[in-house]
Length: 359
Image (cartoon, rainbow, N blue to C red):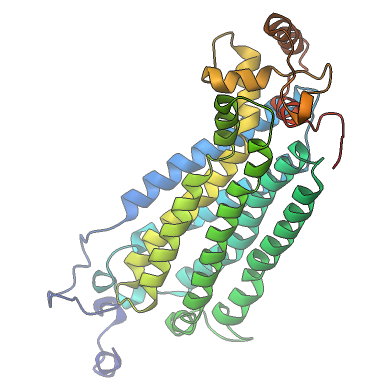
């Protein structure tokens, strides 16, 4: 590129990288990830927004009210929506590097890249912590679960919030410096940091999936009911898959000449992971709304039977109360009509934490 610059060729005519097959650059109508990114991010942003809105509506109309986990999910959603807006404003950048002119790496792109980097850490922290806080409310009577959850929250905070100083040191100009292509080149060491953060994110997602499982499988429930309850906490496996793909694309991008294309693929997995985590945290509220407005089965029978536990009488052996099904249905209907039906309380009753029997 330096020889081209010495020859006086404008940056708008210089490709970011040479084409691997030797073909000339295509700046006019190149293959691009713009449509894929726009469609994917728009769909997941809409689903997450609807989920959080439903969560707030449901929890403000039941006895539970709004809790810390609700506000954390809202913070995560707002930061993600801002990030999506920024990414969509530069979506045309996500083409093959040999079809991207060097002039595209201007000050606006550098600033937007920096902004997305700053927002990602806090957004994913709020999303993960919202789920852990929700699980803490369900399994709060288990001392070992509380300790592990608080430790995990602290570790997530350290890893995710570290993005702010790291991005500021590596990808922001010094006082009086310029937001330009040279600054973006200085950001290259951030690729290694990003791989570490992505790997830690996958670790966090796996631990969050596994954490409730020992309690669930120790309950005095039938196998079908255990499987049903376990599956409600395993929906986040989609986020784990997206997180693993994120690691792959970040590693590919370290030594790749096709930086812009790999960056686009990585961003898709990053946002899908974050939005799925937000949606997973809203599942209990979505189930509460469904059960409160419909007389039809919302879930398979093995799952439905879990949600009809009541607060009358303590479940035996920390498990499911052997109350008459007809009476359970009657009390659940009364709770719905009075606006007191909350799926979270049903979870707590199932695991034996509804009477604060801490162990």
